[in-house]
Length: 354
Ligand SMILES: [Fe+2]
Image (cartoon, rainbow, N blue to C red; front, side):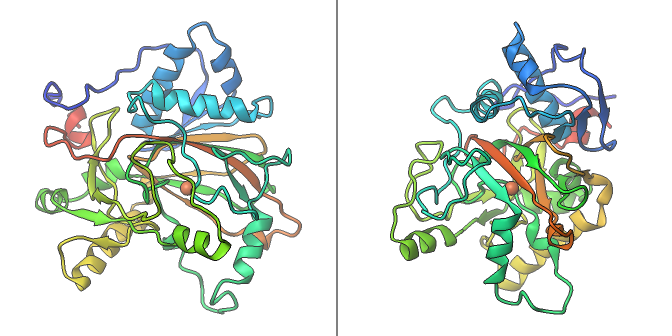
């Protein structure tokens, strides 16, 4: 087995130190995901070696893409969820000046409160009732044609100059079925592309324009929140340029990043039909390789934490088919570095010699 030379990398890859060996787990799939069957996030926060455990957890999340905590995390307060997510980013080499993401539309008077009736600028509330109201006004909602769920795939806060590195979602309430979330490994998708195509994609960037935020602020007559978790995430233009292939800061492995997804609006420097073709090609790789996907069937109080720089995720909008279903989750997101492609980095399989 020949391991890659990592000495030239911009960030030294993090190594797992063994502090979580006492926790019971199963891998969700060979390629992606780990599920801790009994662990409580609260216990990690209370441990004497909390920093060591969180640093090790950051390594596992970054290598496996996403980690599920199956046991009920209902003793975890909102502040603890925020603190935990912040620590994972901080202890894995996030820029010192960064923190948790602030949702651009936090000043919207119609914002949905959390289960406790409060709002928090660092917490994004996912709520099935609010989604139903939103879909009522959506064009084409009465269409008899099957929905194309391609549009659900995304990486959090790609519309920011510094997107999210880690997001943690805690499911407060969920129906017995419906509303699953899927994560797909950007590392493995990159590894399934031929060397000449990889070289071509390595040279591309994409514009991630998301005008909905500015439009919503103008329509609602309120100011967009700013800064949003980084001194670089300011203003209301929301149109950063990101690399199509990026290096994961924690592992040093390459992943497809801004080549596809809800917030990716244009592959730069190519003709219109080529832009469409490239994005459709990457989307097809996601849908044709479902062994690269981990699926979370939510249970009440379960949590998931993922590394946005090496996975995309997609919600499954089917809870409206379950009578009386209520699904509410709260999410905190840490803001990472400005995405980069390190020329010294390699793919995951190359780095591991597999
Ligand atoms: Fe998301």
